[in-house]
Image (cartoon, rainbow, N blue to C red; front, side, top):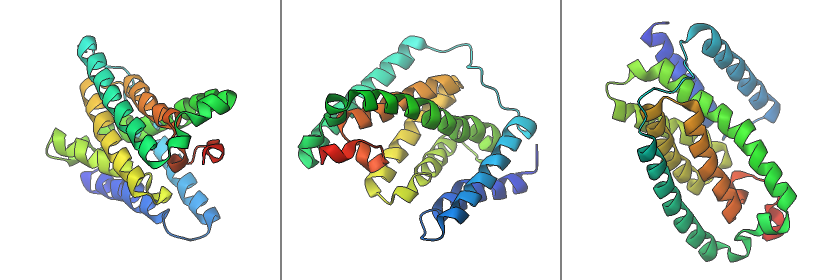
Length: 213
């Protein structure tokens, strides 16, 4: 594995400078080139130079895991339902009711083309590559939540940054406990798909919300 100095610079460029730069107004083609180069570099590191494991650890307390995720989901469901009722009641469950086929398609696309790649990059790769750069597990989880939130800064929404920071804390904690990309992806997909279902998809740039405005 490369030196800590090199990986610290790499971490700063990939997880701080690049996402922050995307929030600035410059040619989208240049942004696309930056993202493509970073993605190809990350894939090279992921599969050639970093000992990434996709197997979950053996001693998982399944009852505790599913109880925690269910309780968190119930809290999220109640808070977000009340939020939509307060801010935009006409959007509540609008897409699944009015556009069921689009709704199902978005759930599948989001789960496999968005959630899974995010978890490979921000949990599997991140923890394998950078865990020794931080003196404690709690700091590692906190920093992971920050950079996960920064990945969504191009939406230019304070609410999105807050939601993704909270989500980042939850997902990082799950990954630390299970070492499973699959389990943390399931949790991520559950919460993210719920936001779209309940009527908060517009702020995450999901299609279909225009009929609910």
